[in-house]
Amino acid sequence: MKKIALLLNVLLVATICVAQKQTYKFDFSSDKKVKEGYLKVTPQTLFNNEQGYGYDLQPAWDGKSNKPFFFSVNVPDGNYKVTVVIGSKNEPSSTTVRGESRRLFIENLSTKKGELKTETFTINKRNIKISGKERVRIKSREKNKLNWDDKLTLEFNGESPRLNSLIIEPVENVPTVYLCGNSTVVDYDNEPWGAWGQMIPRFFTDKVCIANHAESGLSANTFISGNRLKKIMSQIKKGDYLLVEFGHNDQKQKQPGTGAYFSFVYNLKIFIDEARAKGANPVLVTPTCRRRFDKEGKSVNTHGEYPDAIRWVAQKENVPLIELNGMTTMLCDALGVDGSMKLYVHYPAGTFPGQTREFKDNSHFST
Image (cartoon, rainbow, N blue to C red):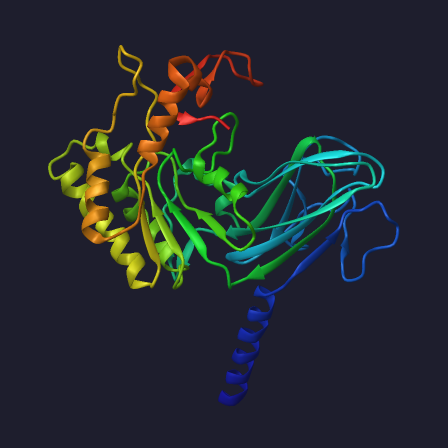
């Protein structure tokens, strides 16, 4: 009996492993003949957990409408190579593709009538589970974010989105860049906010995967205490990268023991040590500047000692540094007081549906 039980366990583990490596192929074309090895998708292909894939969140796409649509597939945590064939045999198209909580991958890809274009990218999917009973302690507002569920969700929009076919396949041999940070890095769910962390995948090929774990309101210590770093460490591998950008919220901490050269640098050292212990590459990033100018029209540093503290730790620990504070300050100075408003969320009331008040946000970037 023990041998039979052991055999059953082995078979169960093997079955799970095979399931985790499953590749999905979907045919969205109007052709009556289904592509060999593909699953045919129709307006009736609606997502449910039993089926494990289908149109999700909004009404299904009918193949003709210019409205955005979502398509989800239940997959385990990991990196996935996505291959999309964009275009239509019957009409021109312009398609933007986002993944999970609006990470940008393909932007305004245009095709002529009868033209099909193939694009690939690699996307990271995760949920809150770490191991055993350990979970990431996400905020209540994050519970409905696509970043933390069991599905891989893709969003297709643009002036006239057209999808011919879709392939989703697991990959393990690409370096992953994990992002740690706050609202200047996070994947935003709603327009017109857009942080650099959700936009940066659009500038990489499928040979690199970006895993954005940033969340609004976090500081270096709360990122750690919320088990977010532990979640990353459960997945990170040798050769991966860990990018760390904090400072905006850390500077608001005034209790004893806090400060740029006290708790802050101590916590940055934790990120560095944890990454190196896994054979990964830590990279420190100075915080993006806020939009604030002096009387001469020059940008004002609103982060106090925190950018310098990050630079000091990077030098002391021999860690690469991305001078994002300096670059965004230079950009604001170049655009000037008025021009820099376009970088940030500045919009009069009524610009977006349901917007009843003016947006005047000098900390967060617009899409």
